[in-house]
Image 1 (cartoon, protein in one colour):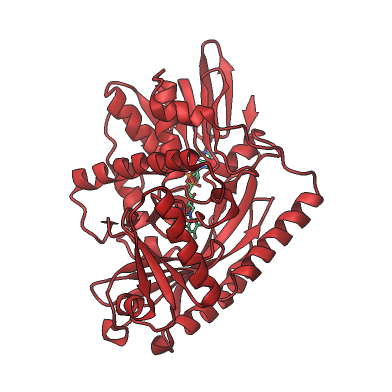
Image 2 (cartoon, rainbow, N blue to C red):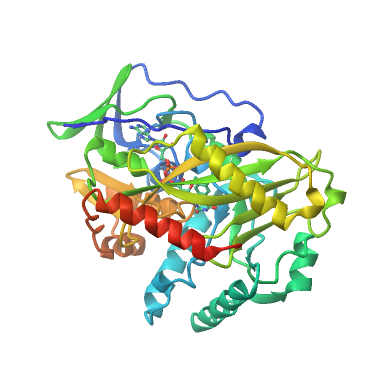
Length: 441
Ligand SMILES: Cc1cc2nc3c(=O)[nH]c(=O)nc-3n(C[C@H](O)[C@H](O)[C@H](O)COP(=O)(O)OP(=O)(O)OC[C@H]3O[C@@H](n4cnc5c(N)ncnc54)[C@H](O)[C@@H]3O)c2cc1C
């Protein structure tokens, strides 16, 4: 029997949710239901799995259990970059000579983007929710400029298109002279993450049923099926897809294999778009992987800037208001340095969110018990990786040996982490060192 010892904690008000009208959550589970497949977790992985299952067999009875409300979790509170090209292509992980492995990653990411694009077309979404506008990698000085150039060289090797921009050209996009160079890649899609995930959740209809505010408390084998207990109900399911990211560990799974890292975001109040030149909507990741992500979000009453930076290692899967405040001070400094023309525009929302990484950067994927399929460990880029692992878990659960399933099955197992206290000391030091080396970026 697998019993959850912990449930997700969501701290800080996500600006993405606050910008949307109120939504009535789907009712929580009361009583006993049966399903062919039950999905635990209503984020990118779980909802993509449910969507894929309904595509594979529209008669399949699928139950999705979400502990909180849709969009409250990391899926609804991220920066909204659905990347096709790894944004750490300039780091050691992607610096080797194994171009084929990189090509796989890119294809996998593009399959995830295809699912999102399909949904956007079905929903008739505009660019405010799903914008296939590409992204900029921006530099803030000579070291960043060097990274931009080396990223371009790596993209040459994998024959991916890009455009290099000098300081004047990137200023004409962002409206600020702070950036010294940039590289544009066209394949990334930018989403309003909370609107996206709500839309995905609300696209389900019979026989796919989503229960919100319904944490899975435990699951246990009963004959040929699985019994999942929730606070006021039971799901009897033939199979389970476990898609609750780092919280999988609270069921005693992947012990000592998941690194629980939090990252933080702040979003400004609306400002008069005439105060900042350039385009009204753009999205930029830093030249250094551990640097600061910035987005300009166009709104009807004004525009906003999103700043995302800081990472903390929190093995207890909890952060404090103090951590959000500390990250907020860093965000304020980054914002002031990049947008002096917006002096006085306050941050309206600040929040934190959880990610699950593995030591060797692989997903925690596969049939971990007979009939239980894991789509865990987003490795920080869940909009694509968790989506893809959810699709692959759905395909594996119905016995489809697709190309995607084969790719996911070919990953090595997550490496065992070093024992405590060395892990905490090492992980914290490593994050601090990488943040320090990212400097201004
Ligand atoms: C501030 C921030 C910015 C980010 N920016 C980006 C970005 O731009 N691009 C990108 O690709 N990634 C980004 N990420 C990472 C991305 O958000 C995650 O990788 C992604 O959300 C992982 O998706 P998931 O479905 O695996 O897990 P989650 O989004 O964590 O979803 C898991 C769900 O499971 C639910 N759950 C947990 N336990 C239970 C239980 N017992 N029963 C039922 N439900 C349960 C949780 O409530 C949660 O909703 C960012 C993250 C943060 C915090």
